[in-house]
Image 1 (cartoon, rainbow, N blue to C red):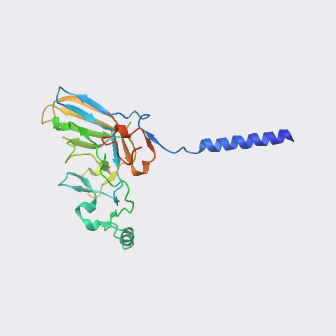
Image 2 (tube, rainbow, N blue to C red; image 1 turned 90 degrees about the vertical axis):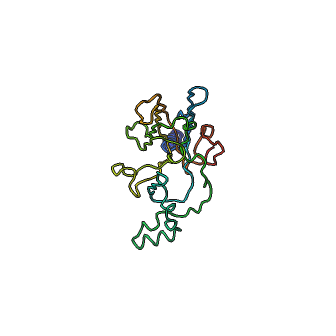
Image 3 (cartoon, one colour; image 1 turned 135 degrees about the horizontal axis):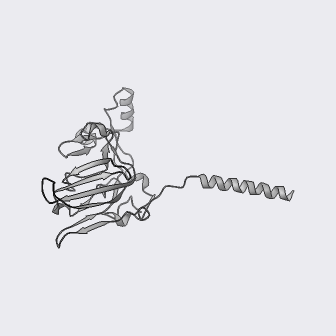
Length: 235
């Protein structure tokens, strides 16, 4: 009888252990483990490139799609160009019922936490000293460059986490952009000596991380790699 009890307990214990081991652990993005680090390269006494490799896509109003804005030379929310495109949840549902889902591509975000612009774009310190450059944003182990920039400047020409939904359509088609999900990405910055971008003199490449509001409590060791370490999305 005792053998039966012991055997039963052993089987149940083993079964419980298997169930526990098969359960997916909570996903946490650890910047130290992923090798995310601040990049600094000094060129002479008065110029340097410093890249803080942590971006947080903040908790803005939600939009199904983005639209190309020639004035800012980048993707923007449709509501930026037309305020009527920003609706309540009820208005958006009514538009869908009427078969006009493009009437309300953006919905008002009722969650007011983390609505800021802290660490919201890819910041390259010192880039003003190197106006002739190319920047590529890539997915690790993939040769496809999801974004390409010529003469990146942290101002009118900057990466905010948007990429084309359909690469075959190009970057400049209406309603053809999405926000990249949280994860590890790669950058490649090529610095040139001439405005024709024919004489490169240095290339800087490494990994960087994008964190959305979903990862507010699921990131470690990232704040000290960000430009602004007081970001509420970073632990």
